[in-house]
Amino acid sequence: MRIAVRKERGPGERRVAIVPDSIKRLKAKKIDVSVETSAGAAAFASDAEYAAAGGRVDASHEALLADADVVVQIRPPTLAEVPQLREGTALISLLYPLLDVELVKALAARKITAIAVDMIPRTTVAQMMDVLSSQATAAGYEAVLMAAAALPKFFPMLMTAAGTIAPARVLILGAGVAGLTAIGTARRLGAVVEAFDVRKVVKEQVESLGAKFVEVETGDAQTAGGYAKELGEEAKKRQAEAIARHVEKADVVVCTALIPGKRAPVLVTADMVKTMHAGSVIVDLAAEQQGNCELTKPGETVVEHGVTIIGQTDTTSRLCAHASQMYSRNMEKLLFHVIRDGAWKLDFADEIVAGCVITHDGAIVHPKVKELVR
Image (cartoon, rainbow, N blue to C red; front, side):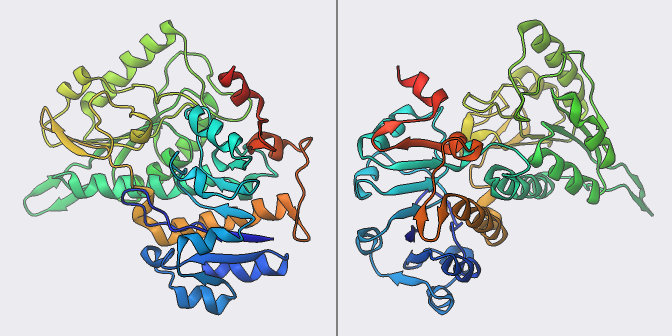
């Protein structure tokens, strides 16, 4: 079995799907690795390091794909890139199949076995394969550093000869992995932190990190898989009122709320932004799914009503070295689960396989995705 590691081509993308450190462990499981030349250069992994670890470095994209059984990457392929994959091979990457049905159709037509790492179920067994969690850790950390760099104030309280400087007030919207990492980072920088989440189960985690949990009577909105689900209209109204009160007082708002397969919920309206102090900062980690802030412009940093709104979509990539290392370890565990002794072991009775394999043998096999195509 040979896996091919493509050089990422997305704007601003610096990560690589497999780092040299993983190659020896993969080869021990009868998985050979080919790497496109300079695939890891932006993440500080050289072609020489890949070769020294036992990987094959291919000088061209065509040579890379010519004998690949599996293509491993981070960003989803474009529709134009799908025909480059050899018919009947496999693709492992982020795919967001509930949002991009056309890509799913193209992969099925090409008879690609498409494995969406963003659909791996959040179970104890799958924990080491959880790409969303590993990459969210990097995003949550970096979001706070970006906010601190953009905020024209100190984060910690300071006692100075010129008087006492009050600590920055930080509001985190969404207390998943990114949100919890953001809380911990903001607290370490000395900020006073509050956090909101529709899932009541995270209150204890938020408070254990030294932040105050913003409580709203909306009922618990957690799915069986541990994700947030959409609220009803009355609950949304109560939520918006509570968030508005806390946004008005915040120096920094970090938005991390996502609903799988849907547009990110709008939690910070344009009217809320107007109430913030000039110089305040919003970092919207949901920008790739149109953002939690109504005024977010994906891929851009803008200033509206004196508030800096950061909607960059390369946040995780800014920590490319460690983000790549974590992604690569996730890929090891996933590959070892679906490949045994150098051959495919796709058991669709297995919840991990059933959860993340989207297309196989020319058909869309994931039930939820199949419903969208009808």
